Amino acid sequence: MTAGLIINEGSTMNSIRVSMFARAVLGSALVLGAAPAAFAGEDIYYEGGGLKGGYDVPPPPSNRGIYIKGYVGQATPEVGDIWTPGYQMNNFTVFHNEIKSSPLYGFGIGWQRNHWLRFDVTGEYRGDAAYFANDSYPAIGGGTPGTNEYTADISSWLGLVNAYWDICNWRGITPYVGAGIGFATISVNGLKDVNVPNRSVFYAQDSTKTNFAWAVHAGLAFDVTPDFVVDLSYRYAALGGAQSGVVTAYDGSSSYSGVHIQDITSNDLMLGVRYKLNHAQPAVYAVK
Image (cartoon, rainbow, N blue to C red; front, side, top):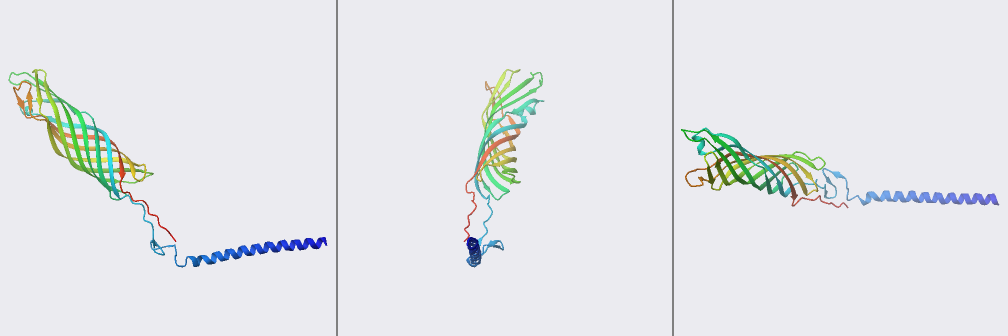
């Protein structure tokens, strides 16, 4: 009896296990058999660049859009030459001729055409910079030799239309180069000409001159977010010339037409930010 009971119990357990296994197999078969029917009318596989069932492949993110920018920097100008009417009448020697560095502040609006090409229009104010120049001349016809020490404040506005090539993007860093054309408006204020050997001082009227200007750029852009970029750049700008107004002796005894500061260029280092106003976000597509 005991042996028979053991055999019957073992047979019962085996029957239960077989029954559970058969049910699991049958359930899996039903699920797999129903899947083709569920997707029979809506195949989700790609075909010819799209998804069957009326869906399109989501487009890649686009950089196209309008952006605004702001920047600050330091301008380090260089001067080609200086000239006054007196240079036509004597042999002048120029010892020193420079414009000191000054801050600059700019703003612009631009358009990102695609991943590698963009355009913008910028306007900037280049703060007051000190101007210094010295020359000397020999005595003529029994006269007295002399020197001139020129000082003035120079400020300018620079407006440019620029195009940039964003070379590549590596881990959110984009090197780029660019070029621009526009205008520079340069003001010469408070010019003074001191001639110590001849004990004379001349004062000039303030004057402003506008020139054609051009520039070339190189920089690195750092993506902080898809919409916000920090921009570190270098620019070489050719600004043209500037001149003072009429220069008159302190006692009104004589005057000349002005001091001409020629071929002003500038090496500019700038730090700025760009913000995309309507940067397109990747679209989300539902798949049934």
